[in-house]
Length: 485
Image 1: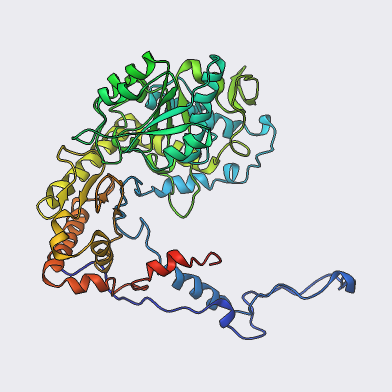
Image 2: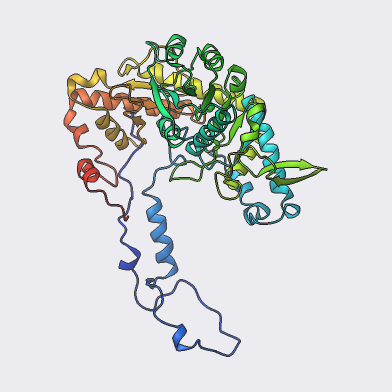
């Protein structure tokens, strides 16, 4: 293939700060004091913190060198399936840093927070238009907390009806947090097997949906990258038997402007702003997982909620049926702001185009790799495609080893071994932000890795060999985790 994207480069080793510097060095110059010295009493003084003595250039070079060890979406293609690691426009960062927003204190009274409250109010309106639902909360701090909020709403709904239920149906293609969110609310998660084409069958749901089942959690598109085409029939079955349909909207990046979940039977939907609406993602946060609901479920949404009265905005707790607060203050406001900016800058046509390009890119990779990687399911995919290692099993090379070797070519590995229903799964989501040239480079690199698996499998078993960190002892790491950093 052509010159690989990954090189050994000038990736420099870097000691700890405490191993650098000399006593007496300083990173800044204090101006001469123009007031008399007045030392603190001895009982108020003592040894200062254990900071090393460093010059400015030592500090700058230290953190700059460490930054070269990182790989992020600003570095290159980040094809993690089911995670939507897409590029974040920098204008969103600039707007989030405006002093009026960035320096606003969450305890400011409403009359001094009109701009922030108006932004939240308008963002809610946009999310309702996108989702096809009637009321929304911006509070949940991430998708998993959005799931928990949805389960709390389902619990409150059945409690109000006077008959609490005990089970939640969860497909085997759902996101992994779904069962945990249901269990946290006291529900027993009931797994639903997918049909032969990788989507749910209406008759399977009908056989499981009984008077003890509170509802169903559906990830759509699902984690196989497939749209649940029977969603209307499934929703009708659940509704006819007194249940609610919860939509895991983490994969909405595939259907913006094309499908409105509220119009196909979804009652409760969480949206991942840090995925679908191009806010920063990774490193443990921050995230945002707003939850939208149909009209009659709005009474249960967390408080406080932003309301408009007499031309002004305020936070109201006057919702007696609410499940209560689910996060401190009013959610991750900086992420809300970035999503607001993204939606405004894209507009309805831009959001729809983004989803179409995400689907196009994923299907392009699917078509270009399906002759060398086994396709888990044959139908065209949505935003991500899922392969398996079935064609490599004769060489003894595993999915993990192919992913490790891909790093030597300068690409972050895709998601591997998920979803669990696909043996040796390789899940690739390129997102809409990648050019054809970048996709071609990734495809060429992956095909080269597959050829190496046939001709020189030992190379893959040692990979990565060109990265800053080489092959780790993963068994030892799992058995003896280092939790202190």
